[in-house]
Length: 162
Image 1: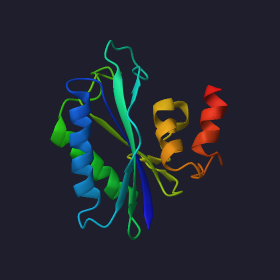
Image 2: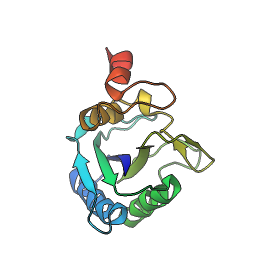
Image 3: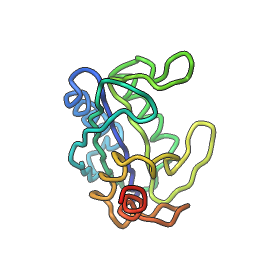
């Protein structure tokens, strides 16, 4: 069994509908046989992170328990394909700065795997700085421990936001 943590955000268009579409697509991609347990955290609204925007983000954390062992790089490709299917607009401007987006899907963690490649870093390298990632993770999987920091999501929340 593999436990996958994903965060979906949107700050343009019908944010809730775009997130719902992403969840439906991911359910099919991550669980084609219908054997996984998928749990969703409540939606969270937040300011843009890492750039200025007049558009607030709507964020959703989800946790998927998939039978068997999963390859994080394969999961990442599924997330990226889902993003492209919903909107092919770039997430960054030509200068490299973040841009508003219809949907952004981030792989936060896969079990307690640590991955550091040019394509993927797990756990997500900025998860501990993002309340909109930590709150859903704390609700869905409060006992998960960051394999590098040794802290749970509730502990990281308390450390950064108390």
